[in-house]
Image (spheres, rainbow, N blue to C red):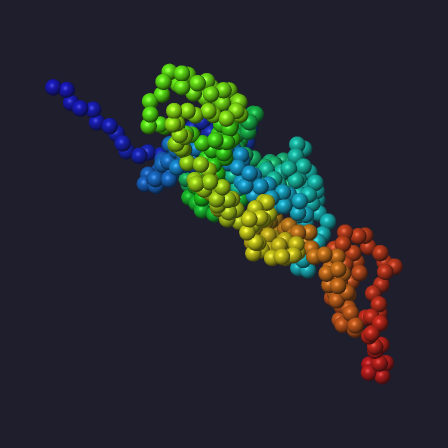
Length: 440
């Protein structure tokens, strides 16, 4: 009698042998990565052993996380075919890419000239302009949940940054040292071999739902907006098929009487003519009546469903619907352009801008707090010319009031060069009284 085989299901840690072998073959590779023995580094994902997975985590591993109830899969590529998704992502990434990114100095908080200004505002690296790099970085966060960029340094031991390069989120994998808990990042470029980056050389922009145990975030596309995007894709396909079929619904012909052969042959010829593209009327005889088989778009409320998906997707991205062309309802984001721009910065952009500034500040200056960087949002919240000039009059000192700005600061806000020949009115305006010498 043969004994049954016993399966060994004991969970054991898996060593990232391939990674450590590659590091050992590179001069200074293990020192740069800060890892010693091969058993110390554990990759999160394919080289890790995990238990107690949730249903959503298991679905992601099996590749079914992108399936929707509409029957259409939702991925970053398919989501881009939805105009609302494209509009929201384009609006957020485009706005951030066009904002100036300045370097400031403490304690007065004034803007200063710095070498880092060029790479954040003009050219990020030899292959990308700064605007292209910003769009790529933020789009990765919106589509995949995490945005990654590499800080480029002149040498392995240098603390100076000479550029930065965004990476596709699927090409970056977090690694963790099992001894000290230190995180590293493995980058697999499209061309060339993979390499490992220290935490100080990677810019990581997580999203809502960030898990510090795996250093990754869920994608808003395939998580919160998955069903809404799937419904939008299905609605778009239904409309396309409806118009491709001549914008007519399916129907049948019914009659209570019996048709002879000539009537049937005539009916078949008439139906074939319409199938071939002819718009001639369908001749019915013998008491034939059309009977609708499919629901027409109006009864199915396809239009209202598509309008709802627009609002649903905009709600997830935090974008006001009217800014992506949805003007079905009145906007509650203000009436004037200045107010709408202020609310867009306050409620949509700041949740992306602040994490960017915080991540770069702690990576660019890890030990010194003299300098810091942040986006300049004044261009998006600028009022009309009359409102701005009235505010400048008050800031320069109107009717004897105490000024709190000078002419050079006002001209800088208007993108004008300084002019020392322009001086503020020493009396504070025509209505101001000169000071009494006896009072001093």
